[in-house]
Structures are given as structure tokens and as C-alpha cells.
Image (cartoon, rainbow, N blue to C red):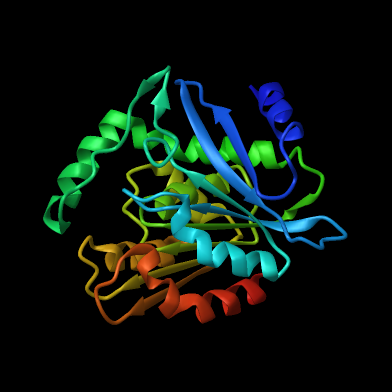
Length: 245
């Protein structure tokens, strides 16, 4: 597996590269690696995981700003989303809700259909891939996710020491590995949600913040969810990233 991933990395252009990898259960996953244009040494790296029903483009504005600040970014399409919808040669993608009232039903159906429990391991394999790239400084790893992506990144802390994890409207994790990560990882964690989040993310954020060794929670007014919060919280994110260096 790792040999195959390394080959893909070496054959791909270093700037704005689209990377692919194959999971053990046959999903072809896609990610986009962007690096600062004028980097002269190994750069910090940010792994970004989107929310349910979205794809990597939801981070586009933020990734450009991160690149301008000298940080490389890998934005991935989670299994069943975006371009990551082929499993063993057959399309297997999430069920997209038609309106807000259908989100929970669509999410639960998609979780079983696509295998959301495997997403943390998918993200770990992405980091294994990045570890082979000597232009990236893995000692300066940052994790950022929204909703589904936010909760899926928490167990990753069991395998990788990150400088920080930032989760917007993180979903509720049913994995004991998340509790283990929060109670043992020294990574700084920042959980952001709105008070009236329609999917209960404020409750999740408070619970995660309490369980984490180095946890911070920010509850905002309103009912926004996921990356829709970015314009409102970008300044908080920059401040947190600076503090986590």
C-alpha cells in the first residue's frame, strides 16, 4: 500500500497536485496538495477534511490564505464525496439531503452505505503519504475539519502528533478512539460551533473541549454550521494557529 502511494506522489507535480490513493476496501480517494510558491525550506502542512455532503472546494478560500502564510495544504474529498466515489470500480456515493430536515436521515443512511467509520483511517493514510514528501515539515502538522470531517480527525491524534486541531461544528463521534485521543494527546484543540446549531454541534464542542487535555471551545451566536462559519471565525483561526506554533 505505502509503496503504491509513494509512487503516485513522486509522479505528481509538486505544486497544485491532485493525488490519489486506494483504500483497503477499494475506495479510490482524491486529494489536492497545494504548496507555497516561493518556499525555500520544508513547510508546515494543514490537512483539511470537509463536512457531509460537501467536497474539498469548500476550503478553497482558506487554503489560498494558508498558502500565502507559508503553509502547504492537502484538501481531500472524503469517501463517497466529490471525486472519491468509486469503490472497486462501482460508484458508491453519499445520499444528498434535499433540505435541512432530511440531513440526519441522509447522514445515517450514507454512514452505513459508504463506511464513515473508516474515514479516520483514510485520513491517517493520507498523512502517511505526506510523510514521504521531504518538502513538508510533518513536525508542524495542523488538522482542520468541518462537521463530519472535524469529528473524523480527532482519532487521527492517536497516530500523529499535530500542533493543533481545529474543528468547525464537529459531529458526534461514537468511537472510543476519539475519547482516547482527546484524553492523551497534547495537541492544542479548538472546537467551534454556534449556539443554535441545527445538528447539535454546540453540545459536541463543549463535550470535546472538556475531554481534551489542551481543549478550547468557542460558541458563537446564530445557527450556522460547518464552513459557512469561516468568514466569521477566520481571525480566531489565525490567532489560534499562531498560538499553537
